[in-house]
Amino acid sequence: MKKIITTILALTVGLFVASAQESDRKWEFDARVGVNIGGTSPLPLPREIRKIEAYSPQFSPSVEINATRLINSRWGIGSGIRIEKKAMSTHAQVKDYRTEIIGEGGNKLRGNWTGDVHTNVENWYISIPVQALYRLNSRIEFTGGLFAAYLIDGSFDGYVNDGYLRKDNPTGDKIVFDKKDKGTYDFSNEINSLSWGLQAGAHWSATQHIRLSAQLTWGVNELFKSNFKTISFSMYPIYLNIAAGYRF
Amino acid sequence: MKKTALTLLLAATLPTACIKDEAPNAEADILSITLPQGVVVESTPDYYRPYDNERRAYPLSIEVAFGTDLSALAPTFELTPGATLKVIEKGDTIETPLDKSRAQDFSQPVRYIVTSESRRWQRVYLIDIHYPENRDIPTEYHFESVKEQDNYYIFHELAEGCAPLTWASGNPGFALAAQLQGITSPHSYPTTIESDGYSGNCLKLQTLLTGDWGERVGKPIAAGNLFMGTFYLPTALTNSLNSTRFGVPFKHKPTMLTGLYRYTAGKKFYDNGNYTDETDKFSIYAMFFEKGDDVPYIDGNIPSQGFEHPRMIATALMDEAEKVESSEWRRFEIPFDYTRYDKILDPQKLADGKYYIAVVFASSSGGDEFKGAPGSTLWVDEVELLYE
Image (tube, rainbow over all chains, first blue to last red; front, side, top):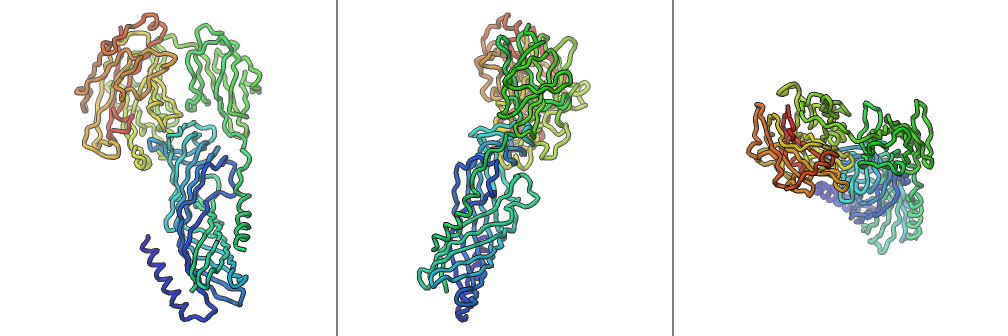
């Protein structure tokens, strides 16, 4: 997979640099390297979630190349390509949360969980943004638009402990997991291969070529495939991308 | 400016990240029952027994001392917070506020309905308050009759003048996950019955693969077992050794365990992530021990502890050399060894049912530690427990 990414990147960079050299001022090109900080979360938090014990963003790099066509001195329209990771891990306390777990004996079972849930999300995407640009002054620009992202590699897994599962429904057989017991789960195969949503960013030019960007990407379609019913609520990726860029 | 924009973006996301008010409880459990003062309860009830299809209720059995007046007992209940209780009295459903205990005639089991705080879920209980069993359990085991429960079989041994003996097994634990694996035949469970016995039907125990999911966590097998005692479901998936609780009262001094078996060892022996060329072995043994309030049972850890237990009085362990593969029925005779533990039997305790017996069969002797060969099968028939 790394090979594919590198190849795509190299090709795109080459293309952009080549066209940048022969373009007039109507086109602008930039390349960015950054990190995503955020979460893949139900919105709003459902009643099943009683407490967020811990949240930690995981190292989520991004590389991005954009081309912008300037319409006039203030407005422009642009697109690009971004390869990025969206990752985080959480530890939450839940009550009566529908899930599917694997017990000590490798037994898989479904039911309503009350207790702790540890989740790791680690998704790699190739994203294509389409956005409008507004130039406030020579240093500050805003962008806003849509993105579509294709999942290259995804995982959504973790474990439950310190609680109990009620098999099938809240009155079913009670299966106890102590703090030391782990019931694992893995819904990696259920992640939607397409993610799309809104994005909005602010950019500050430190010098003629160096630019700092902050950009929020808000996933609008569900993280999981629509036929995945194990978890009773929908989850969305919401990440803030902080990047340093070079404007050609 | 950039800061302002960021603040605005964050401000938009934060309100949605708040924890909502807790939903009303969806569970509807009886957490505990307290009987009026003066009523002596003989053992802690198991509040989480599996649903009984035949009686259409969760069975809850409480043993009280002989002579207790069962005709008007007023138990008090502790339920899931917010849940409410109703009792079925002569066909009528009557609300029973938790702060007022209501006397019932427990000479027959009484049906109770618990409704969750959310009002959406109910659990029906059949509460059976009864005296300790006075009759002896049968001592000859023919493995002829089973009852089907949730797609698996439960063995019963019935004999004239004896208390019915219900054998326990790990099947309820296997059943928890079987449904998602598409296992619907009781014959695909580790503990099952077969018609091709030495005489009539027989017991069939098989070590099975638990599928992809078991493979993932390095515990891909489930051995068949059958034992005297109870299987405690809540810890079935996390601590199956603790769930296996041996022992039923026995008022005689056992001397010998005899019977017939056939055995096929599975081809590939699984041990801790690897398949080895070790040959699988079965288990047939019996234990005789003194029950106490502090030791209500001996659990499934006992074989790995070398059958060492302060309450152990005698064990009947089969010679390793005797455990052979055979397609023909082979007879076993295992004497009870009293010398190892060097205890003196108290005749009064024996008469009072303070001594417990457990006869145990398993298709893989290391099955409790997820060691064994898929395909290992033990057939057992015509077992007899001899006693003085």
